[in-house]
Image (tube, rainbow, N blue to C red; front, side, top):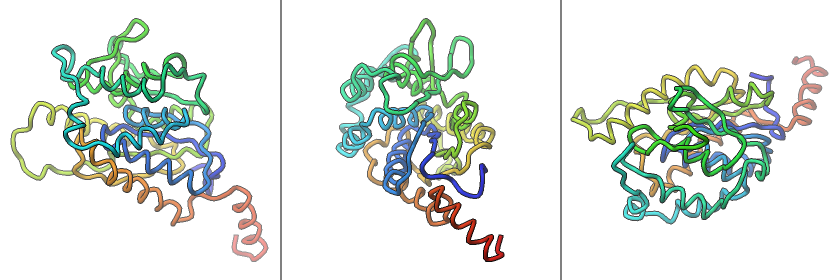
Length: 280
């Protein structure tokens, strides 16, 4: 912890990976803003990178409205099949990003954004914060075996969750404080039925297990961790957006109920009162 409180006027957000579970980030961000928090920087991986980028561009409402408009049929119509590198090509996803964000660059964003990707060629984590935002997002969501790797700046990139599922250290190493992490893979639930999984289920479950264990090594420098409980949400359950967003709001409310986020001035005033009353 950075202290006995989190200064709500100076928050940094590390948004974790989670495919459709990442929709919970919308609820988290909206609730933090409603409670008067000021977000000064964001780092995101995979779905977390997407939601962070929309917020940093001032357009989070666009992806929220889009997701709330989906049903199961519309969701699967947005997936373009591929026969090389992964089951899904990703062109339709890029089209949606471009429609909403345009040819936006990192320098055009309202607040600093850091997108975590995995360089497939050299097998290392990289952090993108310059150039094309859409290219960075397409690289960060490229779940191995499901989405085609994204070729960008002379290299192939895959899902940032492979190397850093909750990028707290990306912010911490750059001097940001009051880091709130959103961990969507904190609880790996047992399978209800032990049957042979499909190829996609096998791949997505493997990623879930790997990121779940890797996350525990990445959140040590977080001032607070928000952990939405989204059991049973599968990779492409985008049409369940309302329930997922609501869980993001619920999980965020818990840290306010426990008094873990305060205005810096209010916190100092309370400390003075405690000192004067002999309680500190």
